[in-house]
Each structure stands twice: as C-alpha cells, then as structure tokens.
Image 1 (cartoon, helix red, strand yellow):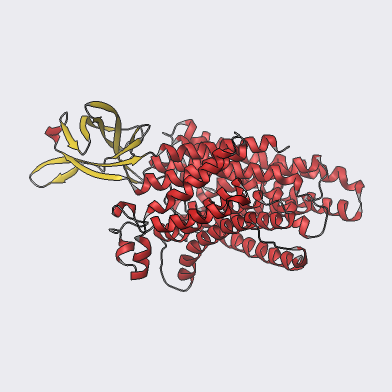
Image 2 (tube, one colour):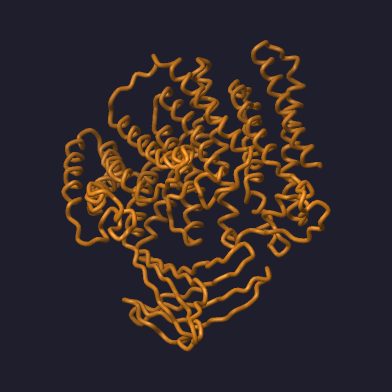
Length: 609
C-alpha cells in the first residue's frame, strides 16, 4: 500500500541521511553534502505525505484501513475525523515523528553537529511508527478477509470534545521539542562543543506545551468528561514527571546539572509514552499491548544505560554545592521520583505475578510535605537570604496548624475512604493532619511574588504555580456532593438541596445521528431565589458503551457539576430520574493559575533572547 511505501521510504531516506552526515562530520566528506541534503529532504517529504495520506483516509471514510475503522465512522463530523487521526497510538507516533523531524531542518540551517544525536532519535521514533502499522488493512485480519466494511467503530462519545482535538498534538509538540535539548545534553557530556545555550528555547517551548497540554487543556478535558481536574491517572502522573524535571532543568544555571536533567526529562518522556501505550497501568488513555511496547522498553533501557555511562564519564565535573536554589531543585526532583515510584510499584508487582494499584491518596500524602517545603523555598529564594529565618518560622507555623482540624473535610485524606479505613494506625494519624498547614507556605510564597513588584514572566510562572496548588487542593478537598431523585411527575417542580433549589425543566428521549438512544434532561439551579444557571445532561447508550456527559454551571466562586446516570427502573412504578451534583468551590483559582503559568512561560521565552 502507498502508506507503507511512504513510511519505509522515509525511514530509508533518514537512515541514509544520517550515515552521510556522519561521514561529513567525522571525515570531512563535504562532497557528500548534496546527497545528504537530498536524502534529508526526501525523508521529510515521504513523512509529510504519509501523514497527509492518513488524514485523507480518515476524511474519505476508507474503512479498509484498520486504524481508520477503529477510530472513525461515517456519522462523525469532519472536525472529529481529523482529530481521530491522533486518537490512537498509530497516529500519535506518526505525529510525534513528523514534529520531531522538523527540528532537523532547523539544525541543518545552522549546521549544528548535535544532529549526530538527533538523527538516531528520529530514526528510532520512525521505527516505532512502522511497528505500530498505521496503514494496516482490515483484510489482513483473517475473520474479516473479503468482507465488505461499510462503517467504522468510531470514537467513544467521551472523546468527542473540542479539547481532544488540541490535547494530543500539543502534548506531542512538548515531547518532540525535547529532542534538541536532549541531543545537546548528550553532546555536552561527550566533551564536544557546548551547545546548551542554543537549546534553551526548545526546552522552554517543550515546557510551555507541557503546561498547556497536560495542565490547562488536559485538565479542562478530564474535568468536563467527569474525571476531575486531576485524578492521578497513570498517564497524568507519567506526564507530570517530565514537566517537573524540565522545570528543574530550566531553573538550573549550571550546564552540567541542566544537561543531566534534560537527559532524564527525555527518558521520562519515553516512559510516559510507554505508560500511555502499554495498557499495563489501566489508564483511561491506555491502548492494547503491541510490539511497540518492546521497542519502547528497549529504547528506555538503552537511553538510561547511556545516561549512566555519561554521568560516570563526567563524574569529576560535578561539584555540587548546597544552596537554596539547589535545595529547591532537589525537592522538585524528589517529587518527580515520588510520582515515578507510584507508577513503578504496580508495574513491579505485575511483573512478579501480583496485582497492586496505587491510588490518589499515595501521591497526595507522599508529595504534600515536599510541596509545602517547595513553596517555602520559593518564598525564601525570591525574598533573598534574609528570609531564611522567616521561612523557618513559616515551616514551624505550618507544623502547628497541621494539628488543628476544624472538621474531617480538612484532613489530608478522607476518613471515609477505603484507603483510610484499610491503612495502618501511623498512616491514619498522618492522613488525619489538617490542610490548614498549607496556608502559611502559600501566603509566604504569594507575598514573595508580590514583594518583587514586577509583572515579569518569572513572577507570573511562580504565581500561577501557587494558585494551581492552592486552588486545586481547595476545590477538590471541600467539594460538596449530593444526590437527588425526581419522579416523572416531578418534572417542572423544584427540590431544595442545601443552599440551592434544583428543577428539571425538560426531559426527553431521542435518537442521535449515530443511531444511539439519548436521554436528556435540562436542569435549572437557583440560589436565594436567583437563577444560578442551567445545564443539559445526557445519558447515551452507545455501541461502545454507556456514557453520561456532565453538565457544568460555571460561576465566579463555584462550579456546579451535574451528571445524570440514566433512568432508574423501579418495580411496579414508573422509572425515576436520578441526579448527582457536585459543587466545586473557587475552582477558577486553579484555572487562573494554569493560565498565568502559561502566559508567564511565553513572557520568559520572549525576554530570554
């Protein structure tokens, strides 16, 4: 097929270009440069045509291609057919390699020698793309050979979101942008020319798109899908690791430590891709296990071995001196390690033949004290060394407040949760500490940012991080949850729920263009006699499963989150309409933090010429 020809042609062209560039760089064979340039351009053309062909196959409803059949259907709007191109692992790998290959053009224009490192990365990603078989035909499956296929399976209804169109490509731009900093870091440790300053913009670009893709856009998508702003799903946790390491690396001024952190960041990106693609963690993002997993595992192991060798080879150049900056960066790396351990424990247990899972409580409880320490260090670093003593006092005050718990809602972990009930006495004691402990570090760090009196990119980044932490904890820890049941004859009537009055004004059942039966309810909410807004909630019986898209009534000081799990049948009586309602207080603080963080990174990139 044409798609496979383009992939193999591109792979061969890039491999030839790499070999030719090696001879040009190491042997001075400039006579090979025209052939090298032609091979590089041919590889990019093959790759671009392969990507465009895949887009065309989706738009033309060519269900003879397995990947198209798996993620598209005739009733899907064009908008979502394009988004379906990167809905699965085949398309995301093709997108990843295409974006990564663009860095070769940028480096070629500058005659950068670090292309010697970038080329193997691009070729490896190309190999993963070929293994994923994006152009595999349905006819290659024995049970469908010769069968006419008129329609595809289509995307799950929960994936039919505008945010799904943006989230994967933005995240993979972040992945791809780290290729150049990784190459420069390896080149640096090999004792070659120092190209670390050259790649700072690439690292910042990756940082920005990680913040947008994982934090803002990914957070909005998961929230609107009903999973929450941050659930510690394996893919979320895996994507947080490179963000933390990259943040630490960009804050590091010494090239040796920055190079080490950039390499670890790239390894963690491969690890995050492995988490998402392998299916071993049961993530909502996971796909089925394929031969790609083994290649990814090999890539992670090989890159890790190379990293260890490079560090050992350059061990004498590391002169670690204790400072506030170094301590803050060490805490950031430690938090990344905590997240990694939470992902590795279930994997190790599965390899050993046992099943184990790590819930959100593990991440929250283990990382919480270090996040508070990081906030205190942020305040001290911004105030200056004169703030060391006030920082210590803030820490002591935080410890005192940890033992003041006005109610169970202030506990680090919910006392009614299964985790708490099954925990040891020591764990219960720690989990019962109060969230009031976060107030002094948050105020201290916030005051330090305001004290600078400069609306700079760095200030916005730090302010955004503070708001993300405090807003996220407040909204999720003090969420109010309610359940209401309406009889059919209650439609149009109001029911009281705390400070709110709830009314189902409309209810109907219809068949959507996909042929699914959809139950819809329009829910109106009032507070103190005034309308707080309305939301339309649905329950969809789809061929891929049953789904309950949420309705969100947004407000300045709270979000009202409504879900409808479908008509509930009762014996000898008409079915009832159950509603689940969650009220998130001051959730906009979290979203504001995400926005300020992203704007701050952009300002830093503009200023850092």
